[in-house]
Amino acid sequence: MLAAEIKHLIVKDIRLELKQKYALNGILLYVVSTIFVCYLSFTRIIDAETWNSLFWIIMLFTSVNAVSKSFVQESQGRQLYYYTLSGPQAVILSKIIYNILLMGVLSLLSLIVFAALMGDFIQNMPLFVVSLLLGSFGFASVLTMISAISSRTNNNFALMAILSFPIVMPLLMTLMKVSKQALETTTWDGNYRFILVLLLINLVVVTLAYLLFPYLWKD
Amino acid sequence: MTLTKEWWKILGVALVLYAIIAGFLIPVPDLRIIGESIRNIFFHVCMWFTMMTIFGVSLVYSIRYLSGFDIRYDVVASQAVNVGLLFGILGIITGMQWANFTWGAPWVNDPQLNGAAVSILAYFAYTVLRHSMDEDHKRAKVAAVYNIFAFVLLIIFVGILPKMSQGSLHPGAGGSPSTVATLDNTMRMVFYPAIVGWILIGTWILNIRVRYVRLKQQADMNS
Image (cartoon, rainbow over all chains, first blue to last red; front, side, top):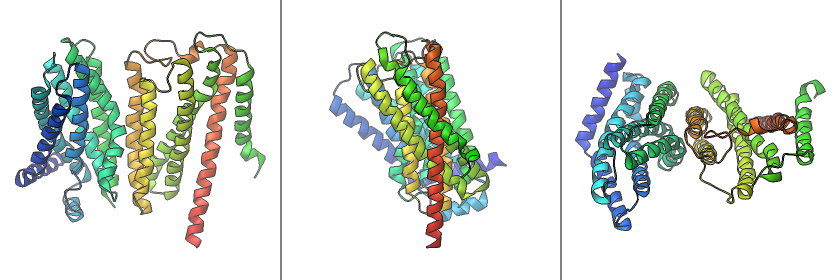
């Protein structure tokens, strides 16, 4: 029942996206122009640490921009309509899964563009991609929940950033640690615990979203 | 007001007074670099214990609000955040002063410092979030959700991540022995009462804040 509802809601979101072609194209352009601005201002990056920080900062801002409109895009009236059709759990889980897909695509594309323009420093590509995908998962789930919170307020766009940055910090710091390893060494040793922490954070966030979203849903 | 109900306030004042007086007077071990500034442990560390306790109170009351939608619990949760922030800022100030003395700079890149700063930012965001809504119950609900969400994630940050990273300057992380373990017995006689005292003082401030806000709400309703 829940799975069927989630499936329909995700399909709805994807079809809406394909019809409007606004979010994905807009955010893609946003990433590419940001990376290009960095390319023009840095010209060339010499060390891996700067490369890493810059990449994750761009990812942070991109994901805030990409996910922030999850709940704003649709009018209050339509939200009410979903309320009559499905439960809150299905709505939040479908939004999270949709945003995970969106962020997965976005982060891989940004990695390609970033590596092409700023130079490729990555020694251990599989590890980097794993951390990138876990990061997209985490960003998507945390920010979906924050966007649900900020959509209940009057000026949600500014709030989105100040509410999410502190919360997303544990995730970001862990991601930066893992990906720094992937830039500097080819081994996987000692990184499993960071991957475990990333999985743990993702699990905690999704559980919290599942439990807490019903309270945001009803007015 | 009976003495039987108010004994803990007196105890709080007595313990903090004891911590201040004894904290400056007792002999402390002559440690390298830290020297006499080790006495700051009676103040700086207590601020963090109090902050965490008060934020914990806020979390409990947020959960209680969500399980019954009683607006009185929301008053406690929101005021606890304000009081916790007060102790957090005091903790940062005492810490920066101490860091400036022992580590040579008021702010160093240390997991524990960053965790503290991020927690404080998150709770400031909580207060901004509250101000952005007018309707009482909606505000209470949204704020409670954010409070629970933020607390759990920050516990991961402050509790787990510093232990995983090497090179924290703080004692107790990355294999170096914890401060409490190296404290000598005289210092413990001051340290533990100081923590209890400051937590009691924090609770008292919270108590006064909650009563003040409730009276104000009543006055608003009557006028």
